[in-house]
Length: 202
Image (cartoon, rainbow, N blue to C red; front, side, top):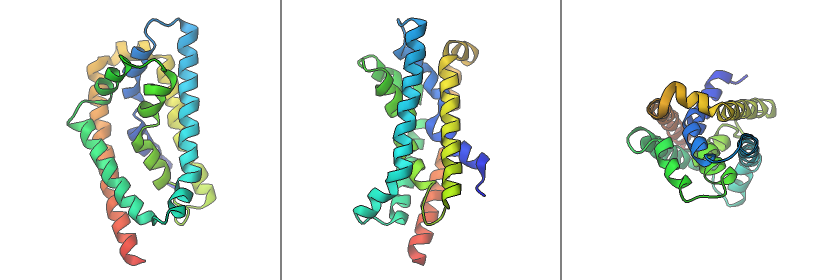
């Protein structure tokens, strides 16, 4: 039995549903309510398909090209750590991705699905949290369920985006994004240490 709460927190940190709200508001400005709902649903479905693909095929692809999973864990942990640092010290997710919106038209896919929801960090987490040699099929299904639960949170927040942004403001979203970055940095360090331990025990 996996720790469902910990798994949920990991995916909440890498996907950052609250940080997606300002991005969503920016990409849907000028659209009517029906179009806004359609964009929210499409972005969530596309993101779910992308992340499920990485759950199912990510490790298979690594095996096919001869990369051991511990090496991927270390590399993925380093990438996640750098990603977390940009969330903490650099421009926050809302600030960075709203800039992409100004020159983007394909709103449901870019930048909403990728890189806002199905971010590189989320893709890496999807692979590392479902390692075949560590987790049973039932446990991998539990991880996938937690990942999809976070995506449901993303959808709910996008549908209620105008209320959320009035409640916390852009500054509040930025603060929460930085806190998520700190949590993600801790997860990344754990991944690197775990990968090193497994690699040298093989």
